[in-house]
Image 1: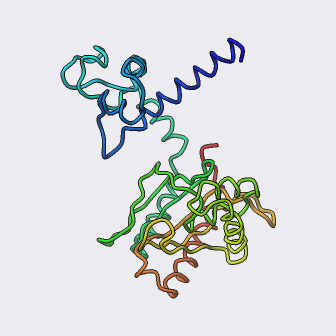
Image 2: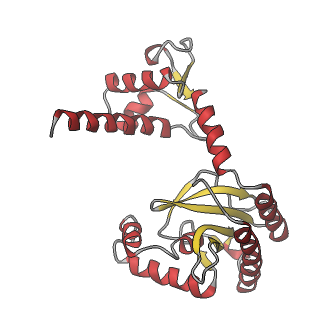
Image 3: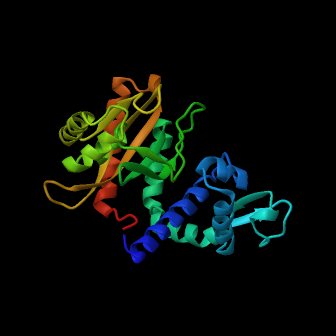
Length: 267
C-alpha cells in the first residue's frame, strides 16, 4: 500500500471512529464519558481523547460537568451532543420533512383506525422511519423518526423490496438471522406485494406486533418505482383478517393520493 493509500485509509478509520462515538448518544444515553467510549469501541484512552477533542472543536460534542466548555476531554465528566449538530439537524429537517398534506393524511389515518402510521424509505439494507403519527390507543407501536430497521422482515420491508434486484436481496438475506437462503423468501414476499398491492406481517421483528403496509410510488408507467412505504402497525390481537382488509384499503387510497402529488424525498 502506498503512502497516499495509507493516509486515506487512516482518514477513513478516524471518520468511522468519530461516527461511532456520536452514535453512542441517544434518548437512553444523552451523555457519554471517556470511559463509555473506551468500553464500547475498545480504543486506547489517548486515541479516544484525540477524537473527542476534535469533535468538541467542531461543536459536535459539548463537555458538561467538571470542566468549562472547550477545556477538552481530560477535564470534563460527561459529553452531550454539541450545538454544531443543530445546523446539520436543520438541513436534514428541511430535506426530509414531509409536506403538510402528507402529514395530515397520516394523522387522519391514525385517528380513523387508532393505530400508529409510519412512513419508511430504504437506506442500504435497512429501512428508515422518516415520519410517524402515533395511534391514540394506550397500547400502541412506536418507532422514533430516524430509527432504522433491517429489511429482512416486516410489512414495510416487503413493500420496499418490491423492485429490488437479486443482488440487493442477497445482501439483505446475508445480514438476516436466516442466512443467505432467506433471499428466496424475500423475493416471494416482494412478488406477492406486486400482486396484492399490500403486505402484512405478524411478529417478524417484534413478538406480538403486526403491520399492514402499501407502496408509495413514482412514475406513471405500468411498473412504477416504489420510493416509500406507508403502514399501520400495532398489537397483533387488533389485526384480525377483517381489520387487515380495512387497513389495506384505506392505506392504498391515501398512498395513491400521495403518489399522484409526486413524492420526492431527500434526493
